[in-house]
Length: 494
Image (cartoon, rainbow, N blue to C red; front, side, top):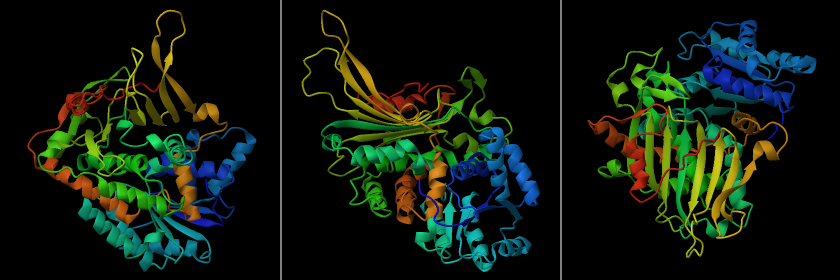
């Protein structure tokens, strides 16, 4: 994790929202607790809330304190120090009321030498207006940076429009498009596993790998969030960013250097090599589903259309996918003929994010019961790496084989707390290191591949395939892998 070289002003637009309270502020507290924030660094929340500094600090104390360690006098002192960093300014992003922008300017005046980071924890349609208003108020310095949360647009055209709007104010080197999955320890270890160890490289190709599975499964539904999800869906919300980023890290070639552009260059090449899926092929290589009532974690839960605390379902509600699966291919020499199966869904049997690399069987097995090796990289809930190999079961008589795991659990192997992904990414932003953030061409290449699938889905009269909550997705997803004699890797992480 990189340390900030000097004091910073971190300005969070949407600073009282769910993302700030659940992720950003706890991550920043841990960074402060670990001594990674300079003494003068301030965190300035912007919202329409009409709060003063004391109100905001009280809100954070009430909502965040329970999710961070604040036990004993020493921890209490650290927590009070963190609260003292916090400020709040009420802002009208439309610019019709300039009072807040004037107040923010007064707060920042005289601190131009500090790193100035604008973190936009807000809907993407606000990115352009916010950047224009910040520029008009004279708050954007040559050393300023802006962080954009996903999703960046709804399709290629809207993503390009947002990039144009933000790019009119900030240079590309100042723009940090965040995907928190890239900050996870297992994702970082995937790069280390591939490029700091010699034993995998000779077999990391189509000669030895049968297929790759990338799964992001969630047990939660969308209570109170159906309005958002009706306009997003699993393909936009998860596949276009999280799953394609993981695919890039699995499939990319070794970069010449571990620097900010070399890694991103190789990821773009993977996206550009993805075989297009369009027209009639969309039905063959993709599956979409929507959860119905079922049992999740032993508790009865409603279907998507009946989620509580949500607006009444609309036509869009009936058509939106809460599950998506895709069979992708990377058309280059290393990966020719190797399918990449991508899968994500809500109300699945268990929460799990993982990458599974399935190797081919040995050319000729002299033992009955042999099975192919499998490398499993678990991103959550318990981060770690597992290599499944064949071993002989103890005992006399006939040789009996059993697949056994060689495991690396980060929690068991490394002492101390494993930092949250946002901690790493926030420190990289403050240090000005964009390696783990997406470049404009990377985001647009991902949308360019996703757009034809979205277009075909939206043109069809067919509704998403239903699946009961608490089950591993619709039957079509199993058919997707089953056509070639394969199965999904479904192993309860608990």
